[in-house]
Amino acid sequence: MNEINKDRPAEMEKTDVETDSVQKIVSREEKEGKKKRGGCFKRLFSLLIIVIVAAAGIIYARGFLRRSFTVPVAGDMILKSGSYTGTADEKNATFKMKLDYESFAKVGWIKVPILPISVAVSEVTLNGKPVYLHAGNRWYEVITRRKRKGTIEAEFSMKVKEQEGVHSLCFDVPRTTATCAELKIKGKELDVNVENAQHKEVATHGENTIVKATCPPVNRISLNWQRARPELEEKDARLYSEANTVCSILEGILHCNTVVRYSILRAWINGLKLSIPEDVNILSVTGGRIRDWKIVNESGKRILQVEFSYKVQGSYELNLIYEKPINLDAGSLSIPAVYSLGAEREKGHIGIESLSSVEVSTGKTDTIVTIDVDELPAGLRTMTSRPLILGYKYVEEPYSLALNVKRHKGMSLLSMAADSALHTVVMTSDGRRLTRVFYSLRNNGNQFLPISLPDGSELWNVSIAGRAVKVMQADEKKLLIPLMDAARGSDYVGVEVVYAEDGSPPDEKGIGRAVIELPAIPNVPTIHLMCELYLPMDGKYRDKDFVSNARMVDRFSSIRSVGVPGAPVISSEKALRDMRAQAGRRFERKVKAAGGTPVSVKLPMDGKLFRFEKILVLEEKVKIEFKYQLRK
Image (tube, rainbow, N blue to C red; front, side):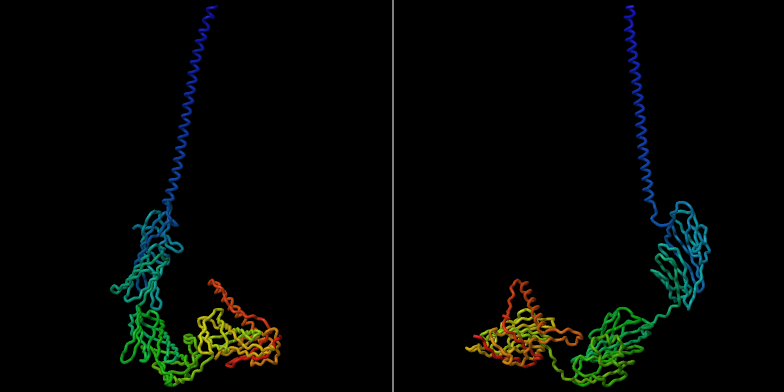
């Protein structure tokens, strides 16, 4: 038993070893199987990735190729060019057509329009072989399976239309990139016109005329021909002219402006010729296409030759400006006669205006008639801005016109006036006076304003439109105030003058007498003169003690704008004060802008106020005399 028990552990150990070996082998085989299965899955996954990438590449390549080779035109084909060669007589025309096209259709049949069904087609080939031809609603169509490029050739005929000697033919064509036509027409010296042709050649070959034309993309070919007219020379031209002339009578000069309108028929001309009097000086010659002009003598006549830069036909307008020295004291004035040479018929009108002091009337005339100014053409009346005084009309040349002129003595007119003048006089208790005058002048080109101040006065300041000016002295009693530079471009001028006087003091009892003489402006009328007199408050004044050629008033009169219906009444005093205030503000702004400080003379407006006015002061002097008594 013991031996058996001793042997069992050995056998059991052996059995355990074998069992461990078998388990190791099994586990190793399981591991190898797992490895094999894992590798298979990896290979399948890699293969799947490769397939996906390849499919994406194929899809992208197909899209790229489709975009690269897609034809950028609408439709399944494009018509490249078409040419049409034929012959024609007065009744019929036959043509051979050649049309190149390129098809982009993948499969199936295509239709190529070649000719309209209005023509008779006799033969059609595609790449030199007969082809199916289908007559549609509008076009004959070639039906083919062919792809790529192709050339269609066809022969067809049509009738030639004739109307009033003009032969024509017209047929629709498919719109191609380039269209060429060549036609041999029976007859010579023909005038051929091809519609929409960008290039045309016409040549005579024997008894036939060959025309070649190239057209842009068009939908039809249309041409006509007729017998060509013989080329006329310049001498065969027919000229018809109408001249409108404005004559301005000035001192020593007769200034004329002539507009000639021509109608040139039948032939082209290279220039014009006009007859010019001997005593006329040409100032300018203007018109379209003029290359040069000059004055020559032909057969003892003075001729104006106008040369064109190229030939002219139809309507043409020529403008001449010339002058003639005259003597208005001679009593007669001859109007220069300018007319066209070679004209079949010429007519014209003359208008007279006077810019000098002469009386003009009609004198001796020949082949010219007097008409009313309103009967002159509207185009002639618009050639001047001044009124015309005489009008004339002629229908043939040469003509002559003499005017009677009578000089009248001119009169000088008023060139400056003072609409208003406001005098402000302040007198002190010792009899001294300070006066400020503001004139509202209407000036028409005068350089100076003359002014005479009272004797013994001292000038303090003169300003125009708020700006101080330098005064010049003409003589002992008259000063000159410059106007042109201070108020250039203004119809109204505001002039302010300030001066002082010593005066006479009252006596010991306070009784005094004053004589105030207002400044005068010689040869310048004053429409409304106003005076404000400020006297000392402690004085005694009676109205009957005032003596003046101006009227004492409580308020200044008002004025109304002349010639303006419904114009408002304006106070002269208020208008002058506003004008003076505006001038003062303008002066202050200018001085401050220059960095300075404005200096002006201001009167002490204090005391008892008395007002005087006078309407229309001419050459007289305005004086105010009065007595007074001051309280002690």
